[in-house]
Length: 149
Image (cartoon, rainbow, N blue to C red; front, side):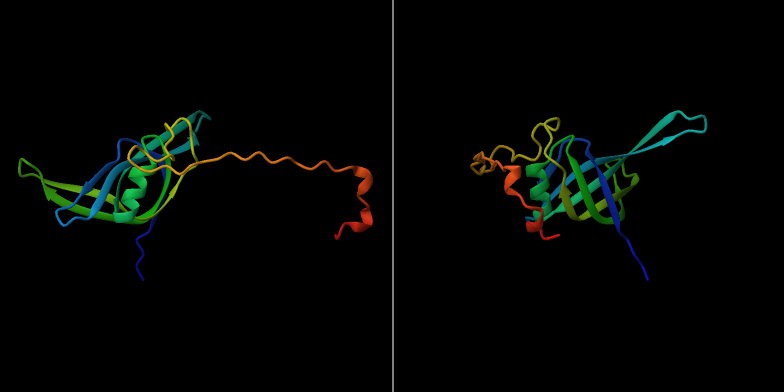
């Protein structure tokens, strides 16, 4: 049995690139930062941050490029892929990427520059705030016998 599955929850570490391949498929690439916190041997707090190259295709690429930005919290479920290529100088380079198969956008945050709000060019839905008046309950109206539990 084989398994190649990864779950990452972190923050988008840079700008999200949305590109089209020569065949017309949409793809986006970005870096996702994850941090680990622990206490050292003498009790001091330590933190380690890792940066992961994430690649999303088609609909996932559109969603993330529209609703996320640098600093947005994001969960990515996918698989690890290793590949190699020759750079401009002819040197062989190796890359490890997370190929996203599912995503979950984080909560709306004012620090992430309204990252969960659509960016320019995306039609916004009209939002209406509805204030609801809560009923006032008189304690004398409640009989303990009427409560079903």
